[in-house]
Image (cartoon, rainbow, N blue to C red; front, side):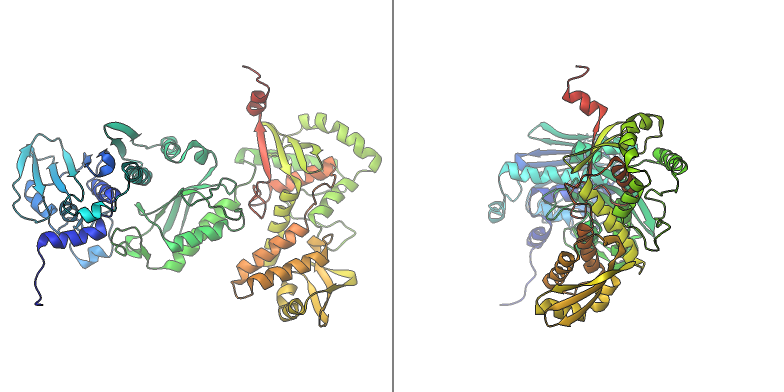
Length: 602
C-alpha cells in the first residue's frame, strides 16, 4: 500500500487516545487550563457521570476572538514558544493538543471573553480544525468549555466506560485533588444539577486546614503534623499524618510538584523510608505535600497525561524528601514549646531535692559514680528508685499526688498507678494518659541504640562468664563471616565449633536482656533478609530487634519512681508516639473526654 496522510480529525482522535481516557481526563485538562488562565473561581457542571455533559467555567483572562480557532487547533498554545520554554515549564498545560483531541471525540463548544472585549465569542468544533465561525455571546469575562456526548462518534471507546456512578466518582476525586493544589481558587462541582462540592478560596492557615478537613476528613487534620522545610533550593511544605494515623490503602496520599499532582516512584520510596521506623507493617502513611523547586530541575513532559515527572537530580530530591519527613516525624514529642520551661523547672526542682543527683532523660545520661559504664534505661529507673531507702518508697508514693499538685506539670504528667502491670496511668494538666510501658521503653531504647550505633560508639560490657550459644551450621557460618558487623553493634562474638558461638561482651544498654534468644533472633533476621541490602536499613532492623529484647517486659510491676523516670525519658525521645512496630505508645483522655463518659454537664 502507498503511504498517505491521515485526515486531521483522525489524527486528533488518535491523540485523544492518550489524552482522553474517560470523562475525568477531560475535566483534568479543562480545569488545568483554568489554572493557567488565572481563574479565581471554577464551576464544574457534570451530567450522567460526564458522558452527557461536562461544562467547565472560569473567571480567568479569557481568549481573544482571533485566537479561538488556534485554541482548537493541534499544537497551538500560548504557554511555550521555544525549547528553552519547554525545559522550564511553569504552566499546567502546554502541549496544545487537549482541546482538539477532545473535540474529535465529543461535541465541543468554546465561549470566551477577555476584559477588553465588548462581548464574548462562541465557536463549535468537531476535530477537523476548520469551518470555525465565531458568534457573539453574552458570556461574562472568562471562559466556558462545554463537552457533550463524549465518544458519540467512537462507540467502541464508549463501551469501555463504567457506570455513571463510577465515572462521576473519578471526577469527584480528581476535583478534590485539584482543590488541594490551589487553595487560592474556589471550586463548585455539581452532578445532575445537585451541588456536590463547594470550596471557598482559602487564604489563612485556618481556612486551608478547613478545606483539607472537608476533603480528607477532620480526623486527618487532628492527626497531622504541619511541616515547612527548605534546603538546597528545594522546599517541602504541607501536612503529614502521624504514624499512628495510617491507612490500609494508599488512598490519602497527595503529592504536588510545583502545583502539579503527580505519582512518582522516587517520591514514594523516600516517603516509605522516612516512615519505615514508625509505621505498622502493612499500613500506609497519609499526607498532603507540596514540593517547590526550580522548573529547570524537573521535566514535566515525561508522560502524555502529565501524571509523572522526571527529576534532573533524582538523588538530591530523594535525600531531601527523606530528610525533611524523617526530621519532622522525629521532632514530634509529647510537649509543646510552652511546656519546655516547665519541664526544665521540674528537673531543676528534682535535682535540688535529691542527693546524689539523678538526670532525667533529655540530659546526657550519666553513670553512677561506682560504675564506668553507661546505664541502661532500666538501670536508670532502678538507680532513681534506689536513691531512697525502701521504707521511704511507700510513704513517698502516698505523698506523690499531693506533691504533684505543687510542682510544674510536665507534658506526660505524673504516674499514679501501674494498671495490670502493663499500662502506666498518669495524671496530666489536661486529663490523664495511659502508656504502654513496654512499647514506650522499646522506642526509648531503640532511639538510644541508633544514636550510639550511627556515632560509631555502642558501649560494650564484658560478660563475667562467656556465654556458649548452640546454633545451626549456617548461623555459625554467618556469625563468623559478619564478625565486624556484630562488633559494631556491641557484641563480641566468635566461633568455637561447627555449631557453637561464644559471646564475650554485649551492648551495655542491653545488659539484662536474654542474650541467647537475642543472638538467635538477629541471626534469623540476617539469614531471612540477607546482607546484600543497604547497611543502614539492615542495621536499623537489627537495632529494633535488640531494643525489643532490652525493654521492660510486660507484667513486671513498676514503682512510681520507675514510671516517672520512663515518662521523662519519653518526653525527650524522638518518634516516641509509636513503638518500633508502629503501634501507639500512649493515649490521652482529656477532662472533656472523661466528662462525656460520665455525662457530666449534660
